[in-house]
Length: 362
Image (cartoon, rainbow, N blue to C red; front, top):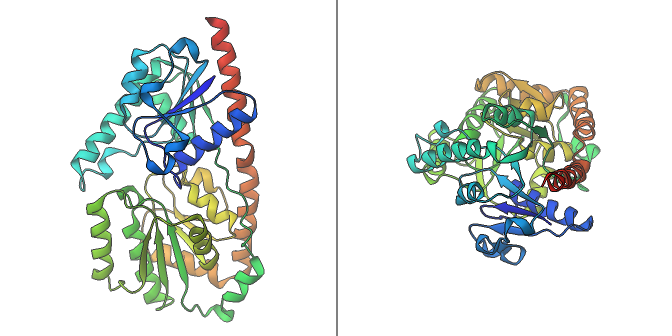
């Protein structure tokens, strides 16, 4: 039996979808597997069991803790003697939240501390990126490995290179260019820098350019500030905050947009980059955290957050058919190099092997 623990299981969430996919793959391999949660989400309540029902350690071959936030799960695991694997999905540093929500910033400090405390308990730590693996080593984990999230993103059936080319304008005359940003509305995402870059783009290249922002608000004060900032910049009619959307709406947004822009300052993996590549969408991103690792050469990376530099990078891609196509082709190759479709199987193999080794030891 290989069970998973997660503070809360959300749909349309990278950790939640990874957890569900991993359980599916374990069961397909004949391994009994359940998901135990600290907090129940009504949308996924039929998929989970309460933490209070977690069996005794002797009845479980391996416990996998899906770790991305603070939780009483950490204290529970320190009291038990389960064979433990920590699957680490990144904890955003507290300094990003401190100006907006002190309680949330403290929660992040506690989360990172809890992650470090489990280092002496875990037989293995799985990171979603090399960026996060290095962090785990700094926290004291001795055996670490990198395996991307198992909720692999397939190629969108709606992606159509020729159709996307016909929507662009010959001669470099950009008109009503559609930018896209996807991810939680959290301070580390620096969405304000994307909006400032859009303003520079409208001034220098296309006065009718727009930005669609998709993502669940994570900090109420930050979300309010973003919307107020869009008004201050004169972009209230150009920036659309869509919140969390359905899978079909997200697919439509990727299909209708012409460039994906990420000015995020801290990412453990950044699944939207993969989604953008899968939808043949050129990408401009800032050279921060795990973004260069995930993106490789499948986009344009800029140093810093200069809005003019970002705006001009977007313009170069959209005005140059050959450059645009190189980005799209590089994205397709990068998806193959990441080998996301086998990530789940690789993780299952590793978990089964770890369970067998730990069982033999005891």
